[in-house]
Length: 418
Image (cartoon, rainbow, N blue to C red):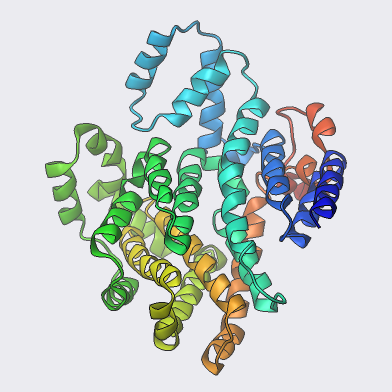
């Protein structure tokens, strides 16, 4: 069996060099193989190399990161000057600035920068996806396929556009899932190290430390989860008071733009006045589906969780983290924590639905929630067209080298065709 796996992995590498998109499709088909996650990792790196920055991305983080590397490339910089540059940047975390300075020493190429982003992001992304895929048992159910697609789209590869936060998100989850589900305590260290990638992970790490302190209090966390789902506007005065009294100066400075009263009020008004229905409801469709599953699990599965400690840890943490994510969802950029909560929750839901016999309540809810999950999938794919290049889907690494930094997004291709 091992020889067969080695041979199929060899063929997968050859296929990747010819057509990476087909190779990653083959990896999903062979999700139980030892090489599947590495093909996905390679594809995310290739996606980064063929990353398309369209006209609509001029205000995005990725555009600013590329411009910074282009600027730094023309400047001679000693190690001491690099440290001084980091200190003057105003950033608390270190990874992105370190990469910008390092890459700029030998190139100003956008393709090289986003390739490196893809390698780093892709490692954590592929491992998180395969953590779930490797644990699926028996014949795959139709709803499992739908949930798995949702899992891939909650923090998808095109979120590399915001490299710092979303890489930190997958890094946090990469340490979290093995700790909760398998009891690997080294995962705690990995999750805490996500702070080096984005300072905003003070919140997720703080929730993790709270969980370590209080343990599995499923009933309390469930009540907290339900309350925050319906009363999800955080008290801004209390939040500002806590930060201004206890947080270091640099954290106060970096978070000021997210918690200023004028900006928060403008954000809340803009959210309420959004008239594009699918831009509002695709996220709600996922969140309400997740809520329904978690409530049914609490009613029907408490005995199972109590008897299986790994499942209990994962379920308890999901309830606790989701409650905090609901609270921060009312702040600018606070919705990002909800994406992390959904990622962890859908990982739990996928494993639970696939690996356990389901009762009537869950079977009926599956039928009810499937249209909502499809809405989330369709809109998420549509968003991905803005940075998914035609080369990433139809090309290969050799072809991509001829279009470095000049790739056309699938959204632009559709505009030209239609």
